[in-house]
Length: 269
Image 1 (spheres, rainbow, N blue to C red):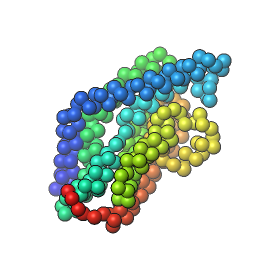
Image 2 (tube, rainbow, N blue to C red):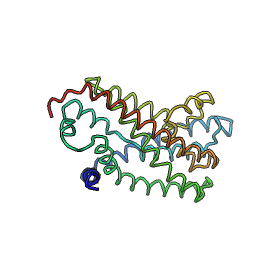
Image 3 (cartoon, rainbow, N blue to C red):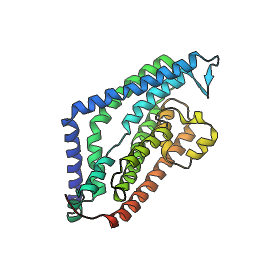
Image 4 (cartoon, rainbow, N blue to C red):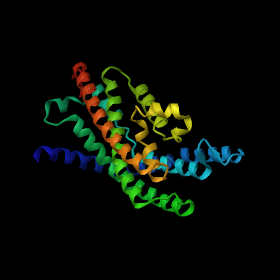
């Protein structure tokens, strides 16, 4: 229990940090609205200039509801602490974790989750309001069963994205400036996770490729749980796949980190 207390403290420090920077959180929340608005205008123009009622398997309201819900989920499961890990590796901040009985992995994850609590609470309220409005206006068929499965999938999606973040941050062991690797990874996750648009519009071949990758379980899968696009059997299978990918990514992150630590030179800090 004493061993666990230090990570609870890391969680508390992350929570305190998020509450100190409320203005940053508010601005990041507001800034995330603009890409969503641009997407809505784009798809509105595409549908209104098309004679078809459906485009790539989606009608207008299905596409708009996907864009809105996916944008909010994307905010819920976002990470971004790879820059902090990179800074620790580059400037020797990792040294204190080598000499003290504190696991760096555990410290970073608990600190991140603490900093995420306020964001999760606020964004969840916003998502609940939006889902209520959309469901009342356009009848998405949101049932209590789907809500429960959706609430299970969100923390799992967050963990998948967290371990992707940790794996990408290990690039700092081999690269002096790893920002390019982080930007590439973020763009890849945004694109392949369905954070920009529903990835199934790219065709069955691309979806078969994504079946062998973890990305679609970050945004696309939770979004399609709540908007009624996925049958219940596929949802259960998707949650199992999320758990499987968490286990795989955890093992990979440990392997990358162990190899990287052999190259780490404890200077600075």
